[in-house]
Length: 323
Image 1 (cartoon, rainbow, N blue to C red):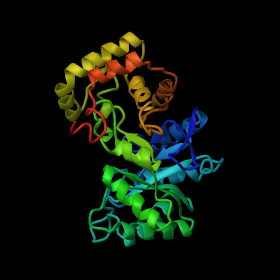
Image 2 (cartoon, rainbow, N blue to C red):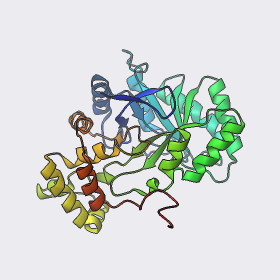
Image 3 (spheres, rainbow, N blue to C red):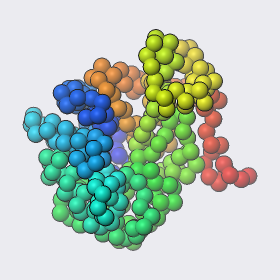
């Protein structure tokens, strides 16, 4: 396994991040335990979750599963850099979501209880909250850090200017600020190249791409359908929209002699400011397969071909907008 620092932080994390969103709704607790144990065997030390995962409002199903896995001991907690998120509604009452100082305090305590740990390595804002002043957010995060409940703070789904706003406010407060940004980024979805990636690079944030396989479109979907495996209605509609690109992509992967999913991950690992993509295996076997991405070497010709198939936004701003 390869390890890198998370942005400018001294924290060392694996170049693949284990996503746990499937734990509970799709993957059983027993299989979830097996996947996490296998991740450690493979050297993956970076796990991502969120208080809303499990999709039963207020229950934090996925965090509870991880907490019961930690409780088995054997160094599981100590070997894991656990990242969780807050913002989504955990109830129907006012202040049960978003980024008010009150909810930050409550949400953190609730996640700690579910995760059966006394600290969170990376506490991430799942989305922006336009109605809460950034200084209020930072004050609440500073208190959590002083209390020893969190170590680092990250963002998710922030625009470039949100990152700038957050970092400049943190600088005024003599606070570390953000160390990471979790963005929707893959060969099909490249808008973060306009301003988010340059902002992260400038401020030293590690980028953690979510949905690296574009919901399955970049995971060899044509091959799966040809073998009789069905896709969801949403994925089928997206496939029809991008069928020409996906056909060219899978043919190119055949030329490389690699699986489409592995090529998509390998491409992300070469992009500006990227620490490592989030992989969401449903089985331990799928997890094992993901490691091939760390071995693939894409040369300039291969990268140019991928840019031709999946054109980016035209470079960073402002060049992408004007002369």
